[in-house]
Amino acid sequence: MTVREIIDKHPQPTSVDRDVLVRCIEACFDCVVTCTSCADANLAEPDVQDLVRCARLCLDCADTCNAVGRVVTRQTQPDVGVTRALVEACATTCRTSAEECERHAAHHEHCRICAEVCRRCEQACNDLVAAMA
Amino acid sequence: MTVREIIDKHPQPTSVDRDVLVRCIEACFDCVVTCTSCADANLAEPDVQDLVRCARLCLDCADTCNAVGRVVTRQTQPDVGVTRALVEACATTCRTSAEECERHAAHHEHCRICAEVCRRCEQACNDLVAAMA
Amino acid sequence: MTVREIIDKHPQPTSVDRDVLVRCIEACFDCVVTCTSCADANLAEPDVQDLVRCARLCLDCADTCNAVGRVVTRQTQPDVGVTRALVEACATTCRTSAEECERHAAHHEHCRICAEVCRRCEQACNDLVAAMA
Amino acid sequence: MTVREIIDKHPQPTSVDRDVLVRCIEACFDCVVTCTSCADANLAEPDVQDLVRCARLCLDCADTCNAVGRVVTRQTQPDVGVTRALVEACATTCRTSAEECERHAAHHEHCRICAEVCRRCEQACNDLVAAMA
Image 1 (cartoon, rainbow over the protein chains, first blue to last red):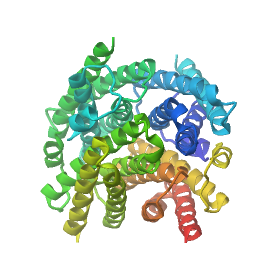
Image 2: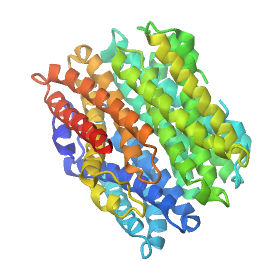
Image 3: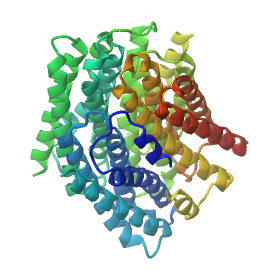
Image 4: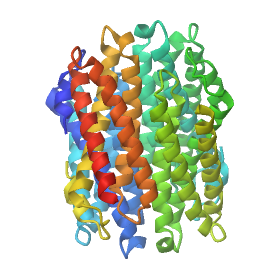
């Protein structure tokens, strides 16, 4: 991804640490793809009925990470209160999705990978909140 | 919109008050359209440079309401912690967007309408959080 | 929804028939909610394994209608080629989703409703393409 | 991004060339971030009034690439007609966005980068359509 390049060219960049910001953006969109793929893979599994909660939480996580990924990508006149509330909620969503995927990680490789990606995004969101303080 | 009809047909509906839930879903998607339209109208105004923060916050609000509208539409095995965190963050986003639009409401009718829709969505989100308690 | 009100306040409205445009926007976002709800209801059905294709196509349709609904909501300097390509692809997506939901309409009320909403959106998209010619 | 890893773990993968598919998914989400960032950077430029069409088309492109990126990520029982229609429309959207960004590439680095990313996504979409034939 070319996230770092385009973020660096913004005419009025935010004051937040650039590395932390870029990691959060990348983690959010990685999570969009991975959660979309995991929810879809769940539908194709023979034991789909045991994976319903996993599919549902992955869909929630993909939608949340897409919205939050876009919001933190924008650097023009951000509202700190809005950004913090959304990034914190995103960390909660990623953690919950990771916990559910971890329950299936031993049986489904897509859940194992998805859990890791959700954990990385949870961490990246927490790091961004800390950097904004 | 046919929100009420489809929500009523869910095989495993959530226990939350149905009227409050439907109002929140409808308010979120009304906010997606209105904030998308207000941000776009801002771009077409001769005083676009005074409306940059308004456009930016409306884009954030549209993205947030889309994600949260989808999450609360889903009734299958929801995670209360995830839903509450997201709906609370959505109320914050709507309130901030409304406050900015209200500053331009006297000069731009689209900001006046958008502020009202954001306020309704803020209220609908707060009502849903209260109903989940 | 307040679609008509906000569309009417745009400082540089498009030349396309306003009624046709508003119907398409409303139909798209109705389809986002209904398809999101139908895909979610499918996950909660005892015969989820027979509804996998339905869930998948409803997720595709919700994503498509969200994007196309946003694009047609924007009136500032639209590109006719882009809008037409997207609205035509949206009609295809809605028709395919409707055909699958119709196969389950006798057994699942959410599929019956979703099929109707997808058909209305297919028609609204075709009407908008015709109005753009 | 971990796109390749998660795509490889799908229990019922599509028959389409895996490299071409992964490149299209990655290109779509790279385009979501880049177009979101470019539209946002446009708002912060002193000559925002010359960049209105660029901002509008980048917003359309981000929304389209998000929807299409999700659709092609799903491998469970895809509908070839839907996927082809959407990926072709995405190529059109990316090309149009690239053409507009190219007009500003000499003056704005974010437009130069965004044009390149849009062109790569246009190519990746065309390659996927060819691979589906």
